[in-house]
Amino acid sequence: MILSRLELPVWAIRWLKHIPVAILTALIAQELLLSDGTFSIADNILKLWAALPTFLVAIFTRSLLSTVLTGVISMMILRMLF
Amino acid sequence: MEQERLHFKSRTIHQNEEGFLQGVKDCVPTLLGYLSIGFAAGVVQKTAGLSMAEITLMCLLLYAGSGQFIAAGMIAASNPISAIIVTIFFINLRHILMSAALAPYFRHLSPWKNMLVGAQLTDETFGVAINHLSDKDRASFKWMIGLNLTAYLNWLLGNLAGGLLGNWIPNPEAFGLDFALSGMFIGLLIMQFLSQKKYFVDVMVAMSAIAVVVAVSFISSGSAGIIIATIIASTIGMVIEKWR
Image (cartoon, rainbow over the protein chains, first blue to last red):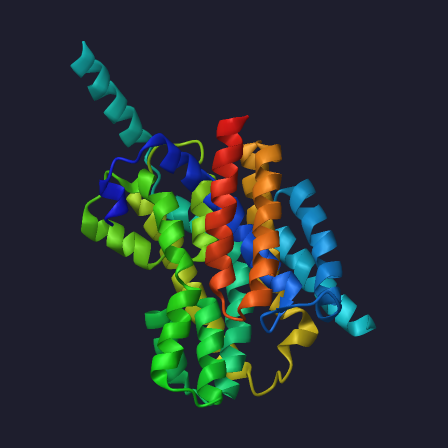
């Protein structure tokens, strides 16, 4: 509300442009690398495997719906197997 | 002449202004995510002992995925209300950054309209909006309301379904439902990557964000990592862009 009133300098706009990638990566890193706030690959190994097809589908289909479905189904299959 | 051109420009913008229904349509890809995460949240809240009315109020007033999961967990562990509020406040501080990133597109709206847009912003509607607006110079209020309202109602719907059916599904994780959130973030990130086409800078920003999140997790167990990582990684991106 306040920020939209201000005329921002160029560097600030450049900085803001990087926020989406930064914030989304940070959220993904928190989901896939941390469990209960501490870093652990072993605790998250199934999630990391499920992330692989999810990333591939996202890159090749560019569809949010297919991406989410792939992630959920991969996770379900992985949990059934391990 | 100048005036004429300005007039023409404002008219074309007006014609291209997208309506409420387009916003609803643009929200559709995220609906499965909202429903499945909402469903999981509903189950968790129900198990934490919240009534259906309480779950409804949490959705309408708090309207935060991570916030509701945490609130449910903390209520179950009988934490004081002040601790719950402070925790959720810090986890959702990222909304300042998201609103700041969207603000340039909403300059033309009144403060009250912007407050409405900002208050309903979520990770997902932010992701959809920032991708959608990347080739435009201003956002349509009706489009944004369509997007936000669809997300809001679906979140409520998912929570209620989870709360009602929670008793029959003791373990939503077995169906991979807990991965819906990660899946949605991954999708939004890749869309962002592909639309910006600045792969080198984006990869550097992403790597820095991961490194900072992991580094912060060794120092503090709170959720400050997201904010710190976002600020540091965006700054690195800005510096790389300037220096190249």
